[in-house]
Image 1 (cartoon, rainbow, N blue to C red):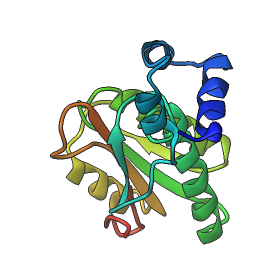
Image 2: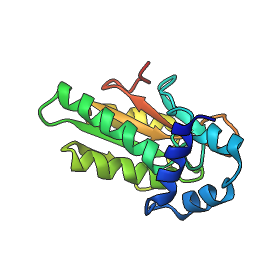
Image 3: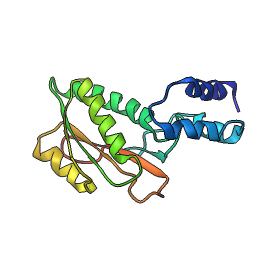
Image 4: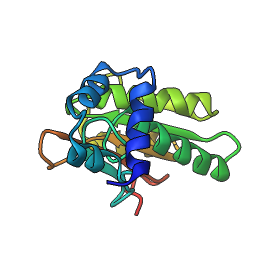
Amino acid sequence: MSIDVMKLYESWKAQSLKDEDLVKDLRDIEGDADAINDRFYRDLEFGTAGLRGILGAGTNRMNIYTVGRATRGYAAYLKTLSDSPSMAIAYDSRHKSDIFAKETARIMADMGVHVYIWPELMPTPALSFAVRYYHCDGGVVVTASHNPSQYNGYKCYDEKGYQMT
């Protein structure tokens, strides 16, 4: 394990994190070099249509901080498309989907993107419908689709309601 990974882990531990589950996760892996390395050796990568990963603390996990980073990047992109961009957000019943969707909405709104968010659980196709119905510049659905229950994901859609590649 590199020294940078340990510094990153210690930095996360020193923060006042919003999510108590992340605090517990960081405590639980203390002293476990392999677990620390797995969570911090890289950033979770944008893959097919977005992010997908195991829930937990670290830069290589799905959490409100990795969702926030992706959202800030997506908001910046949407602002290159329109002077007053808009987006739709949907989420499913996965662990933390509602939290990730609301954090996405908060950050988008803070960055000047008008947000339409479903008030309840919706299947993925509802997001595509909302993007087209409200003439949005893009959309996000929080879901891990067919992945195991310890996963969640953040899928990005274009102005036509198609998954971004």
